[in-house]
Amino acid sequence: MNSESSQDKFTMDEPKEIGVGTRYAFWLTTMDQELFDFVRELICVASVTDSSAGRALIAIKDSYDADEEWHWIRMLLEEEVQFVKLDKIWEDALAWL
Image (cartoon, helix red, strand yellow):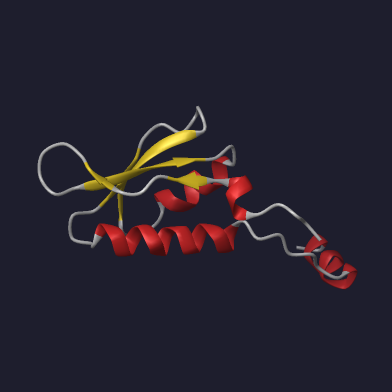
């Protein structure tokens, strides 16, 4: 069983208003590039800045409630980083794919 928590895998600042208008954004920090790719594909995300340094500014689309979407994204990321130990039979089945 993996003892690492989601806090060990990523951190998220609370969303803050940026620039002109009502667009909100938050900082996502992680060394797992796949998490940035995952967030980039979410429909509520307007943009993800360069993540090569392990940190990116995630902008939430104006048509979404920033606080609700921030909580939803956090929940999705916490689920995404969960370590799941598969039985040997499933590992073997996946190896065939």
